[in-house]
Image (cartoon, rainbow, N blue to C red; front, side, top):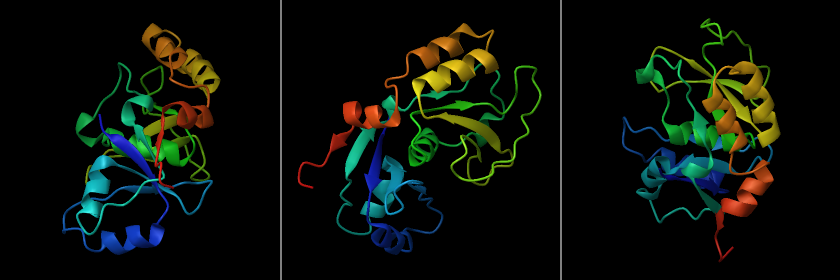
Length: 184
């Protein structure tokens, strides 16, 4: 699994995006609480780095520390977004984990209308695919435990996934697991 990077130079990101070869996708998620910061994964960073000297992240976080729960009911696998996109999206909203909730516990499609990018429920799909998936990000381990108990109540794997998240909060996740640039 790759790394996720927090970068603060939005102007340079925008400049380099224009230099990325046609057909290449750079996914960058603006931090919803620190407007000048952006989360991106290794693949997007590599594309941007190819257009100049490597961008210097404020911090980097191994993607393994931002778990994704896909569950037993996942469908339309060809339209599931890349893990680094989901993880960067979750971090941009100060989440510490994300779960696939496109189908509810009865097998019915989840209907939800997010009111803002800060909502914990959001839509995301693989670029150029037809099916949009519904995801739920969690900002605390406790929130994940309660949600997974209610939403995936009969699935012990889901409850265990929530119980074993690597941090209690987003701040703790970064404090315990992020590698900060020592030259900042």
